[in-house]
Length: 393
Image 1 (cartoon, rainbow, N blue to C red):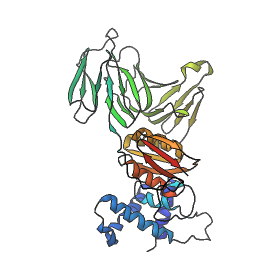
Image 2 (cartoon, helix red, strand yellow):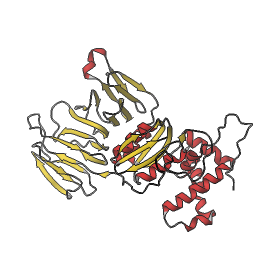
Image 3 (spheres, rainbow, N blue to C red):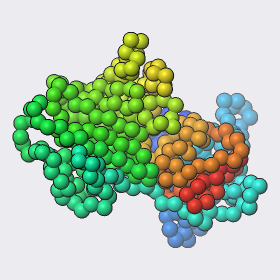
Image 4 (cartoon, rainbow, N blue to C red):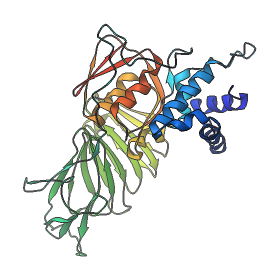
């Protein structure tokens, strides 16, 4: 069996990020046609076994596709990228542009090459709520309903696991006492909270938000560490400000993502809707202020310098909120930083691994499955040892 030329072109467009919705639909239909036309795949007992069988079939097929010498603009197929893109849980890889064997060991290093036997489950909804008096509530184990009351605000855990601050209809004045709470997620955790003004906040793993249970005065201000996505309730008379390390983001009502992990080189603010102002208060004399429009992303360095990227990949920025890892020519170390936070593992490097990947992976599968896909290049190997992941070329 051979892959039709029109399908090859669709895969190339998908890999380059230029495929239209209609082209993606056609590609998806072609992929799912394997379920009906390849009877040997129907012996698979689970969806994972079916996907593995389809993957092996695709790899074998793609290896048979000749490279047209008359088209100098067409590159040889990079087998892992093409195959995994067809499996929806894409993990396209910009590594060597030549075919790899269908079966590849996960570990082929100086250490014994043994298959992964110990596995690690993905993260989930986990967080701790730290109240104004210093007491704490473990949110993932708390029952639904009202957790506590602070002043005129009730703190409720909804039946979908989210946390909400609910006002009792009392008019909020500047004289009301401000109670500050903190929600902190561990590595391997995430959480969603609705603040008292209606603003929705999603926290990624190893992140936190500090906020008043009542927003009073001329502005609404919160502080975050790690990564958070905001859908800010609009209030033209009371701007919403987010303090993330050295940077400050000011909005009236908008959707944006802030990545402010300490181990990342820059604080990234990606705007999806509305307008925000990004500044570095400590460097106010430098005039370090930028206004972002939808589709733009700012980067604040540790030195306090601000840059703006136009046409940012907004889907990549918020993929974590939608249950995915998504990369566009990202280096392996930055990818593994995300994986280490979500799976609560420590990454150890043995040797220099310089690879870049593009594509997407789901965040709801076991870590061994993620590493198996990344290892399809044959250029990197992973070994799980308890809560440690050893990476080697």
